[in-house]
Length: 399
Image (spheres, rainbow, N blue to C red):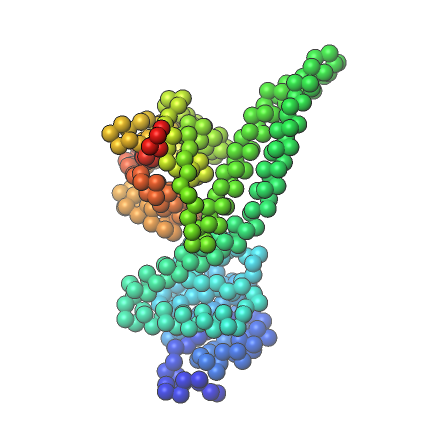
């Protein structure tokens, strides 16, 4: 077998281990890369673990869906027993959720989508071997390199999701416009119902339609516009640019965010309340970003209250003008179980989370958005008493 690197013996080169339960895939991989890298293949996770126990492996590429032992299970075992191995998962576009979970748990640094491109995979293998070689000089350096790569990988996934989300969001907005037109007929429906012989339940439905439809349409349109703003921001960010800083009126955004989070609060058996003035100065943050920050913070607070045994707590959002800082000061207080000092110290670190289904990116994103606006974001907590999140946003100069 030719090595492609005659200056080094074959057994001295870093080993690439490819795991796939389908033999044709293993054959193709060997024929494609055995001339450039030292390659071994395995038909399942158990065989792969035997190879890992017998000799050092630089890079592990594993299929996601395999019998006997899944790719996730194999990756967890390798992360625990062979942490220096650079791990890559091979999957399909339909498997976005497990990819995100694997990245979030630090199981993989990169992913490859089937059918893989030979040139792309060649570049990935060269990068992975270089990353593994860093571990021999500095494990901390390799850790930072892999963390950076995880963020870049998430960015590529987000790009695909943003692209797919755009069309349904546009459709929602168009339907909201149409619903707003139809809502103009509600007074006519009410007048027709007045003289009609209706059953009590039918009349109740008509009354609900008259009193709630306009508000519901407005709320759905607000949420759809928020989603559209988020996708536009993400699209611009992924292209390497930045949208022009926007402004927003805080009180309507607060009320909308509380409405969005109401379902979380109900399930957590907690209440949500705004405690502040009806009007506040316009702040230097877009409606989309302020909504995003408030929804993240209020959701976390409501979930913390839901973890109480009695479940009878609540979340209070307040906002005041800080004349000294020329900013609006937002405060979100909950009386949940609080956060230990050890966990509090790590909150905001990307990928760190105490939630089973969390990504560890919510607070980090809030800190980034607030910091970008020129404001400050702080969390104070006491175990058994609750948590208070405070952030400031500068006031628009002419506000």
